[in-house]
Image (tube, helix red, strand yellow):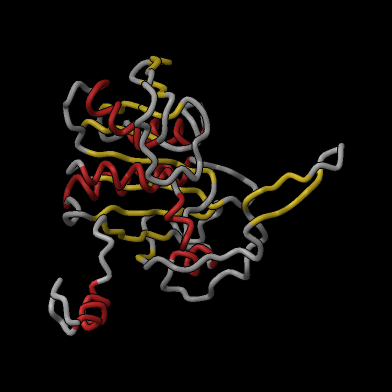
Length: 255
């Protein structure tokens, strides 16, 4: 197999290094990752300035752009248009759970790969102090072998979160739905030594959701969470309700 690996923590992050080593069990691994941390950039694509690529090692390249940029540079430039058999994004430092998925450069890099028709999944390590990426790398290899044998449904990626100390052995995991993860304050205000205010976006997390069927609940119990996500974000359950606003006459003026 030919595997393209990226992340949003930067090309030198220990998580991507562990992931690249693990995925070599499937074939040739090419790394195309941001030259520095690009966390929380979601699906951002660079359109207003040129991008540069630097070779930093054997089959390893840094891009001065976002994770989504790295997917494009990896496929179209570094691999010269050759589609990889698999794209893996991660291993992210910190979980990508619940509502955090919408911000995650790690997850959206995998979605970009999926939009190109390439089987893709995202890997994250939920911090608990140890930051041992090797078990998450081994689990990524297991998932990669599964995807090689079975493929993925059209439009679907996997978002995988591994606890720092997984309760189960790596042969087992829990398939979950996306949960909820909220914060008490969205903006934290502080003052610098000259008493001028400055702000951090973020805040303390509310108590962890307790539903074991969600990614948040499963990881909170110490289990590996595997969540299928779909690139089609249409809320099909709401279609009927929204259409009823105009009496079901799509686009017709009812006045």
